[in-house]
Image 1 (cartoon, one colour):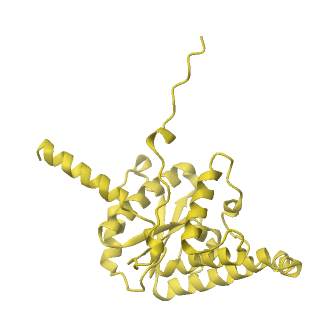
Image 2 (cartoon, helix red, strand yellow):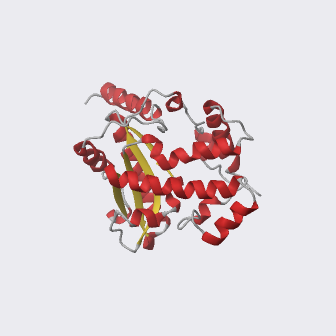
Image 3 (cartoon, helix red, strand yellow):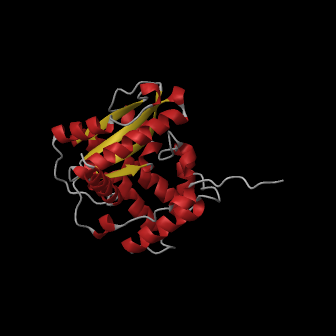
Length: 252
């Protein structure tokens, strides 16, 4: 390959990577099993800590996917009712505990001051596109429930990481998921990484034989994107200078 061809290929990759979006509305069209296998194969070309590959993937589709979604929606309905309802609803949640997280409970903690503005910005811009007002708690909860429908995607991948490697297992899984998302994009599919589905690990374990030393990290919805406006949404992307660290100033 000539230098000109190499530059052209690199430029095309940059455009392709920048064109990726998180899909939040999927067609019900089934994804062929061979295509699911291919994007996972592509995902596994990502680098890994000592090549340990400390992750497992539960592929939920068909009736399994539907059962998990149905249970998630029931639990979210109970949690949402306690969040937006009266004291009796809150008491019911406290007593029954049905709907409370069974895993990754810390996910509900507020973002620290440095990261909060980014999360607030993307939330504000996304909900504005969806026509959900800032003070509309029920409307926001209804939109959040779409997470538990997997935004209509026919396939949901649940990503598990090995407890022994801690942040390094999550790092490996992140590298793998980026490859997976780009492969899905290249094959005409959409993908959406979902932290929201990580709070009820027991529901997934009821369907899959998950080893005890693995913990649920997140999910990834996979399917064919619709032409819904929400699929054009692009979160603000940081500039290089916003993530690269400066040298220390000379203190002499």
